[in-house]
Length: 428
Image (cartoon, rainbow, N blue to C red):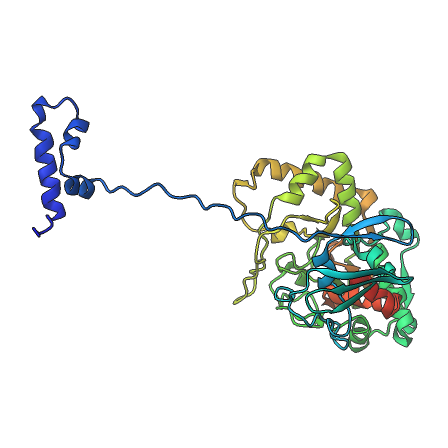
């Protein structure tokens, strides 16, 4: 077998052949005269890519038609029923976790289906396993959706009667904690009257809800305006309305402030109901609402040496639930990092205009609740909803407080306002 010509030699031969083609009408004709090995070496061709052939749609198991006691008829998927069996064999009764592998279990064919007085019984053909579903559970979970809390919006008028509880009531029992957490959830904030003017007692108060979240600022904080941490909160400067920890992937859920002392004047505190303001934005400028809920924003905390924090992914100002309502607010213009000229199909000028309308709403007097914090009366607020701010002050001011995770707060709210049975019905 003759040796295969080198690539360089093949290229040279092809060039020479093309240059000789005075009697060739077109280069294509010349190429037609090239040896096969030569032409393939010069012009590598691959077969046309084969598009994957879509797999045949798997035949789904026919649903079970169930007649409910109400007379209503519903079709229930067999896989859904088997995957949601809550018997002692399928759910660990101590941990309430699923204890079988959903994706290897063979049960898929109902052998016997019986409508009983209190629910539906299914016996599965493959293994003989028996599943039972109460009518109440079926009605609750067939079309289950996340439920949004019921909020009460407010503005400056809340100053006439702000929500509050007494320290002794909270410390005495979980009933007191339930009253406290219910007011926080409903209004977004709550004062605690009669709290001892002590960081230790304030920390004990905060721990009645849940453990305190530790951040780069520490856990429970006790600070003055000495710039110990490189953040404007540690100065005497005025602060605009904002939420804290916008730069965390999971911002802090609750924040508590307790003014321990202040030898000076100024430093009034401001609270703004961000969810109420978002509702106003939707009515006033739907396009701005859409932009602020879609365009992701880079947030950061970078003032302290060795600390640079930014969310795992950029996050919009407004995070919406499945119904289009606001579930979480992130707003701290001071913590906004550099933004691109175009983002998510929206030009920066358009985002800026939406943010300007938002800022206009949150700074309107009718949305601002101003008050002076006093020793013995801490305030706690929902950092996913309520913005806070302060006016500039003079003199020495000592403040203590801390953060609590949102999920821990909601768990404590559920378990101090409802029985465990009621809570579990909502979840599993």
